[in-house]
Length: 136
Image (cartoon, rainbow, N blue to C red; front, side, top):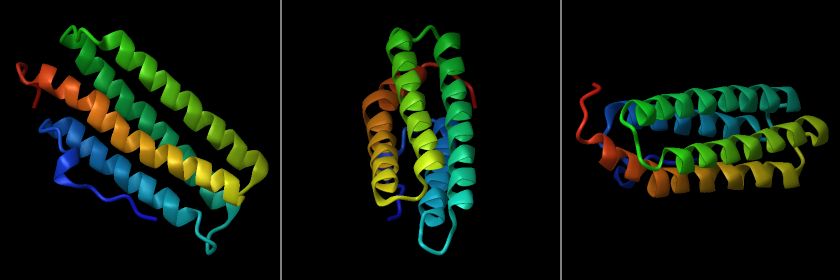
């Protein structure tokens, strides 16, 4: 199961698009790690790295929102926290339950739904706001 970047996901902001593409690469690396050829330790390590990258990406977005006094900052921050919390619950479940089919499906669904919904529902609003600013 591979996630694929399409032009529909492009925001037009170089920093955000670059990080989204890297996130997609990390998500695909995780999907590769959960295949039968890789062990539980590799899956845990890969998901741990993905969680760290998600936090890095969110910090980048949040800095841009604060600098530009984004009016939906609190809602976006809440959404970020909710996603990180969900991802951490999945991470802990992966550690405790291993690469079970249920855990893998839960993580896969979360990552796919989050990636598309986060970009389409939240980041595109942010990018419209950022169009009046020069950062790159």
